[in-house]
Image 1: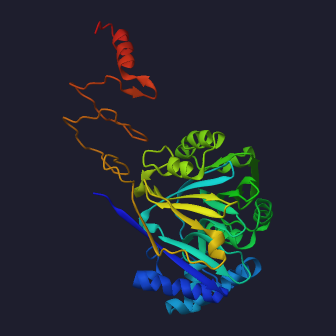
Image 2: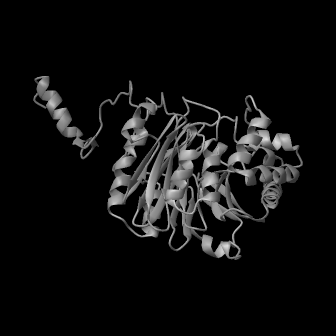
Length: 407
């Protein structure tokens, strides 16, 4: 049975307070009591409102005022709003993401858990900031988006082993969208901001300048190129020691992204390369915070975004330029299918101890499967089956010869 994934679209214009109030009341209208905890109730650790005030007033005073609007819109105290949505002391589970920047396009898959997904696309035009359209995380944060100047940004979790007081990554993405008109401006700001956790930031602007900024609380590296790809590990030599020990999945996602980057296609073709449920860049492990929830392809010159929810989606076209000029988006909800529309894709399920009999698996494909202690018994037809590119029949023939068997 297909599982649908709805995403609400919110349009907010005015002062920072107005944007916060409109967003909060918009959430309340469609989420009701869930509006106060858009990702479910999360543990808040040691929290210092004065530290939050100093940090936001230093780097993003508009967000401090936006929090006042959120508090009034949700009918909670300002202190409660700051604690929950200033993004300072909350749990941040690992999440996956892939991006490709090539041929003047920015393509991106966001992989996470549907239970902890804000399910909110926010168009915001706030006084004193660049207008932008992006996916929200806990009201004030963004995981990706594009602003009115054509700057495209995506967040890629890397490592939280080293933590220091500072700004968390979802808030940093928001600050870049609000304040930066180009990739170089974003790099300069990233070099000045205090980073609380380890993350990659993929960037592309309207001049075609691409970069990946790899940031830890204690160091930072910048990768530039005519084309670039980015997943969930550091690639710069001086940063690799900070990678998580187990980041094989992140490395395995790079080859197809690199192939697409070196052979650029148009925006719709890139969208389908990323969003097809059978794509090597599309992931189904939703139970482990690693299932693809949305795909975004941006053309910063045209000021357009192609957005699809779930897999095998028909992309919705959004014009950041038109919206900034006052035109409504014309849609208040997007809907997609978790894992895509193909019922023959099975992923993200714990099948340990399962027994399979009398199945036809012709042309089936297996990726990222743990076969520890699995047993394949008699009456199995391996004709044409390959393991890591090697025909199984050849492997069995070699094995039989080592055993001195003739068949």
